Image (cartoon, rainbow, N blue to C red; front, side):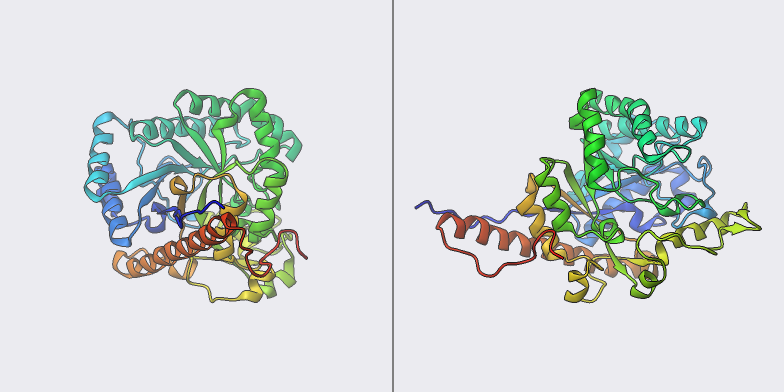
Length: 413
């Protein structure tokens, strides 16, 4: 009989800097861009995080979408209006060393398959600047969307991905980077009725896209930054999703996690159904898309009429909701990740992403205890899952001692 020591492995807990876009007032950070990162690194220490996910975005003066049409303020903590140089990088790295904070990856969340060639080129050029900044910062991954060409069908988008996105992955490979794709369907990106505006929203397309990457020789650059809130939005549960990836031989695809929940509103579900076509949202006027930017925000009612994001720890413990896939079972989420995925757990980022609307407070002192509580909750949940996994799947298994009960099962209905 082989004895196995009890050695739980914990994930690294981080926070996306978009959680507080206005930590550094814009008039200050526009003049001194690195100040925004320095302030966030210091804040992350106060929050109890190990890492930040550094948010980059086109500056409001350069963006193709008006600020008034956006659900959240622009989170360009990493300001790339000017080239990101070695001196700029050294200043950031000095702050990271001082506060003992790491950067999990650099995130730029935009539509890389935009149907307008000029706008697409602008976004791709910005992503290349993100790549270069990541290299200078010593970061090995970026995070973002694939997006969708609105003028094409989903199958045609696979061809567009091959023609347009693969070159981005080749640039990532040349720099030693991995591109982690976040799977939000982004229903509010357009005033049209399309609900799925990021083609990499589900395992079926992840695998199809990865197969394209395999043929192009960039398969190691394409990974998924999994966010369970989007699975809940589409009626999926994490354990079944992970089991499917394992069954298909693709359980290596997930390389990081956003920790953000989704609470389905049963009334909204009864009204519209999952992915249902909402009407009279307010983003159309006189039979055509409104030209008034604040009206365009109403396109997000395709999602918000159905549910509301959860900041981990803020939703009530509700086992019935877990069983109905109407909110995230965080403990089983972390157990399933260990049981079903191919992960280097100790080096896997677990990033708290804050989009719970009532608590989207642009005030440091008010938001601080909220984020502290959520990050602490996330850490303890991960620690509990790590201990359960080590005890059951390693210690007991090594001694042929059976575990008790059945637990949550994939595909069960």
